[in-house]
Image 1 (cartoon, rainbow, N blue to C red):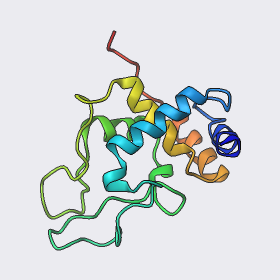
Image 2: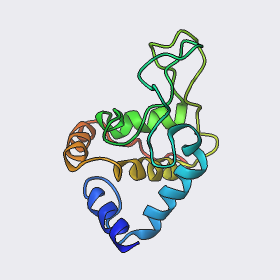
Image 3: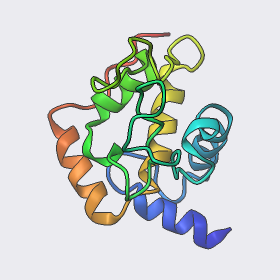
Amino acid sequence: MWLLLSAAGLAMADGGPSSRDTAALDAGDRLYRQYCASCHGIEGEGQPNWERQNARGELPAPPHGPEGHTWKHSDAMLYRIVAEGWRDPWNRTERLTMPAFEDVLTPAEIRTVINHLKTLWTPEQRRHQASESEGSPYPADRRR
């Protein structure tokens, strides 16, 4: 357990809880398992053939680890995708293949889930994502 939290804490050096913030790291993992893992996999591995359209003409849920592309997006974009849902522009259908969670998760919980995803990336990917987020951070929490 210590090794996992230590690695996760190092992963969070940019824009997330420190390695001593085990409650936030645990909360992110719990929220991810509850709301995201059914599509994106318990370890963030995504669905099989995620880069090819399925029979419906939709791209399956991508992985969130190093092999995916989540790390290429800013905090603001990731927040928007989780909050508002997402329809990949390459999909042939019009439905949101990533459901919106803004009525299910609080803004703080959305940020906690995204911070959990950051623990799945390489140090280089975390640095790239932090750079992308400099001009595009999480939105201000308007709920009180």
